[in-house]
Image (cartoon, rainbow, N blue to C red):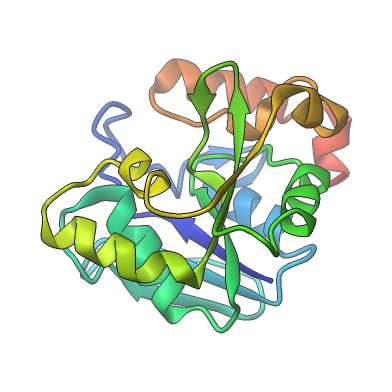
Length: 203
């Protein structure tokens, strides 16, 4: 399974580069890589054009620049899927340090008959913690050409499997897989959570 990490955001609300913020002694993006490396044969980091992410320590990592510059996460998904050597890929943001490996594995196992497998809590969808197939490449390209950048529009064009809250709760009852770092308060919370021994042990 390939994993794609979206790292092309500007981090404007945080006011500094998200991927390199330190949490529990390592960078935010390294937290994400360490979770994904448990079961990924390939990790792709999709960045903004010309942006480098230094100091990464994991095998089989490659970086791709957004093919459609300045068009947000949808462009990152597109570029990552095109570069992927697998038919399906887990897509996550670079600012989600507490991903549940068990939840991601459950989503992977649920994916063969669908183009997208995505968590849904009540009516809130989590498109940046989801599995996408290469069948999404062509419809994403059409959306980008139309300058339609809402990921939800893609869901209307392909076959989607929603992972509902009861399923999520079996693996991630606190929903920490969806905790992303948008501002200083989020960063402070993540640093506090990182002191929990279950994360220090890499469970």
